[in-house]
Length: 283
Image 1 (cartoon, rainbow, N blue to C red):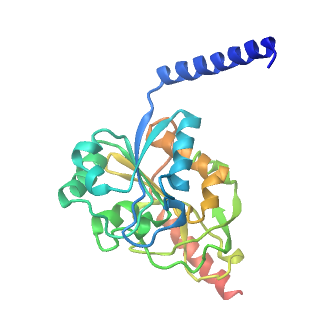
Image 2 (image 1 turned 90 degrees about the vertical axis):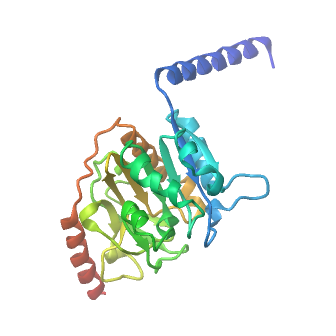
């Protein structure tokens, strides 16, 4: 490489390094514990090849580096890492999990009642986080609902309606969008406790079911904040810029950097239930 080009490149690298250093010094990163342990079905997005991280883990680590907002530690060993002592090191917990995780009762109770509710931290649940602790009410009460089948499988392309396209968390998706991903339906669903941000559009989905299927919602949980997004079954979703931008904005919200109304909107769920029944009947 010519000497002049080398000097220019070094100057650019120094400038980038200085900019990143100033950014880091100006704003403290959030510490994130990402739990990807499966006590049930193991999704490809969190299946680790030998000595490597899973696609969802890599996506979140890279997103944290790209945005400068957060630093991620990943675990598939909750018995060792999801403890009262270790949670003290984190501001946000992410779950892409299944089944009855081997977290002690004491640590689990601390997470719900102290770490999240009282200390005002954040929780992000992805896809099968809703297929975790299905019989443990404090968990599904926090998440918002429990997995109850997926009539829309990994190969299905679905149409999703965005209810608040101007909401910072939803802007990346626009008014409506299509995506190829597996979509859950839920039991233990409590619309009076959540703010639904997007749902399946049954008029444009196959199969078309006569009931409301929410896809993404948020809620206040005591002093804590919860963001749940059904997307993420397919590995390709973790490279979808819309999905990653929504997660980024959710972290801004948890950090208190964007204003988002988390007031429950049960009337929307009622209206979506009626619309879904009419859409299914019309097909």
